[in-house]
Image 1 (cartoon, rainbow, N blue to C red):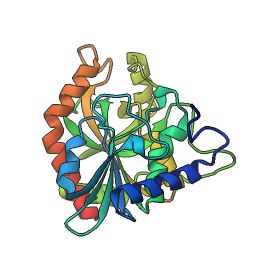
Image 2: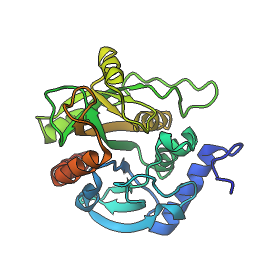
Image 3: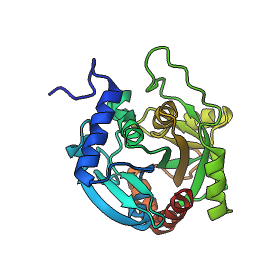
Image 4: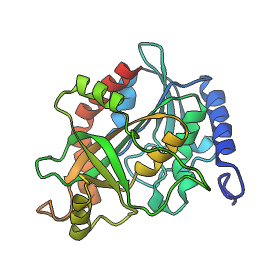
Length: 273
């Protein structure tokens, strides 16, 4: 079956169709903020405000069922106490699924098409700083894209200087002054990084390793959105951690930290709103 984002479709036309679907299915014509909930961050949706509508992502043009446990597969419209509307995305397509960068960027482009001007991207990731502990949230200050790919097409030149908004990171630190930050390195996955790859990431300036976020952030910047990034350090990265890595470890760390980090995220979004 042909997917709506297959060539030669215009991915921005597909995003506008998806935004129309969201408006029709939720009854909310415009969203102000969008947040993608990665592993461990799911409970935040219940704390941001009043849920207006929750819809299966598969009912929206261009979206498919998430391949990864920890992603709920829904889109939710939430009204904050201040009256802003937040689009909560629980349906992330990862690059390693092999569907191409258009599918990876579709949720972000759809969020922009709904009117959102702020994109909050969250993930579960490995930490390189040995002072970090599993279950610790950190801000993303910058990224290194190690996928060898981009969601941009053709001669599209987008400035990445202040990709992860300094203004939004300052708001996050006002909520929690203990927040540390670091440079996120997106690898292709789905295998975890080798100790040598982790050392390479550290040498070139990375502090966090994972398999999402960077490509989405690029698409968000192209769409003119202000980006805030959070990583939940679910484990120390290979060669930093004294034990072998497992996906179950990621899930367990996310569940253990979920209440605390979800409150943090909800408070930050409330301040932005």
